[in-house]
Image: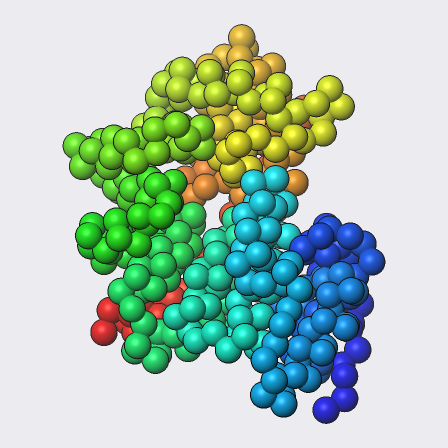
Length: 387
């Protein structure tokens, strides 16, 4: 079939998402758009990633020819799926979330198209791609991963319990970030403790994150409980020295305080983190420097602090404005949005953003709702996974 010309609209969408035409592996600007499914006629946004010319044309093109002749494929070290996943995690730690997504998704398709990985072997790469797509809140990419990567595995009925856990976590994350904690908690409860521990024994950080997410869903639905406190304690014990976990637990507790109108409690929780992060993250010219927590956690610290401080009167106005500006900068830099602790959680606070905007203070955008077709796809996936 004839190679499809890239449309201007798709090119603009790609450049907006990836921050220009830069290779997802090396960040060099001399690159091409690689069709991840090897179909030159499929020039949709979700099927293209920017890749250095030295990788795309000679290396993957030749690998495709060898594969078609049943010749073993040897790829450059940087295009090995594990190397791509390592690079994705490095990008994520440096707050380049779209590049992290591109590497993880490329790893999945390299494993499938060139190396003959079965569904079980390549699913972890797809789950990491979903994790990064969730962080950049790109529903086109989320939809594509659900349809092309998750559904074939779920429909096969052959997925292992460990792989089922990985998928369920990602689906629960989508619900959780949109304030739908009841659905999220229902999915988390499908994961037996014995399975989740076995799945996460190589990563205390991921296991701690799972416990903290469960606690967040409980708190959003019922307020702080003994069960949520126990989960947060276990999370802390699973990753004692993680600054990111410190920030994420503080954010969970701050949302609970915001929900109950305890604005002083929010400020007391987050003031030490705000003071610690503001000089670490922002230069004198307000350029952003990544620190050893996720960009999203950093943004949430500043945003929740800004909202709570605005309620505490004129002595806090300057600090509220500064924190709101910093939150907006990080959200924009990473393409993400405030966490949806509950449905319409931020609605009652939008007046604060309006007042700040009227004073010329930068404000933030809020999470778009999950599209109906994605909602339906997740429901179908869940039915297959728990059949």
